[in-house]
Image (cartoon, rainbow, N blue to C red; front, side, top):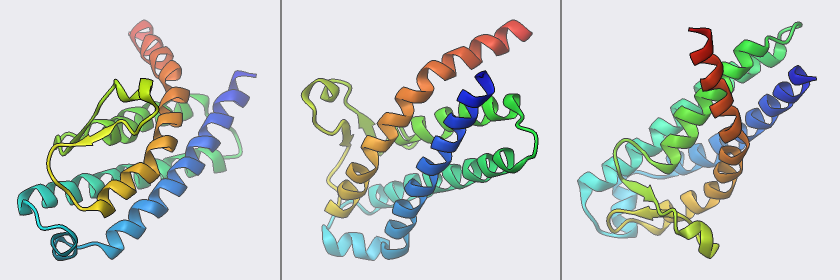
Length: 162
């Protein structure tokens, strides 16, 4: 039974990653520093950091998507491997979206109570970047809620096994 739940979560995460990657790649394939400046003149270093954060999110998403595929394609479902992937998705992908290491944007936790988007940019930015983040945010929020419980459970298991 537990394997079925984890396998289902992994399949959901796989679909989420596939969709997210499509949106991110579409944006990155159509966007350059020059096109961002043409859309809205702004701080070049900040724009570079925004693009870098989005690229990092794409890489983490692609790596974890491939890991999902490998585990789901095995004849025998490996629960421990699936749990590790779900843990990594939570920490690498979801947390990087809501709080990138570059601090280009941040999550305003009060926005959850207002029904508004929770991502706030630190500086002026092109509307296309806002559009991308808004497009991604609800799916990232849903995955975070799904994996939050699981993440705590996995961490507890890891501590207990040591």
